[in-house]
Image (cartoon, rainbow, N blue to C red; front, side, top):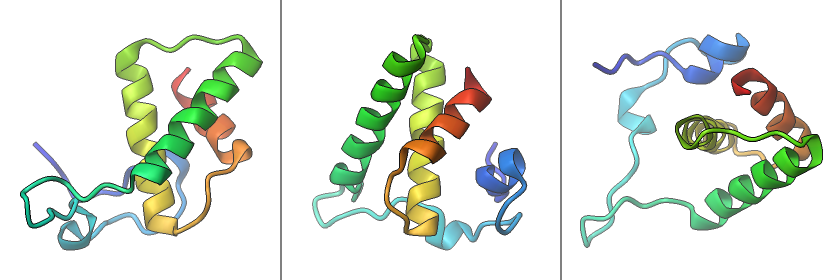
Length: 95
């Protein structure tokens, strides 16, 4: 079951508590594939891996997937660039 509560608000207490499902769903392109921002996704994954290496931590694949998803949602919603500080703060939440 999915609720329209923002995961960023739920975990960090920042932003709006409710997200508009109409705008938060991943758009679908004409071929029927999700229209993901691949560059943003790559930057997030690289920043996570760098932060994990720097802090000598390991994340189980399900936790890493949750972190990637949470950060992707955050950076899409806020329209900010990926930065190490934000990635590190989110990593500490799930580690």
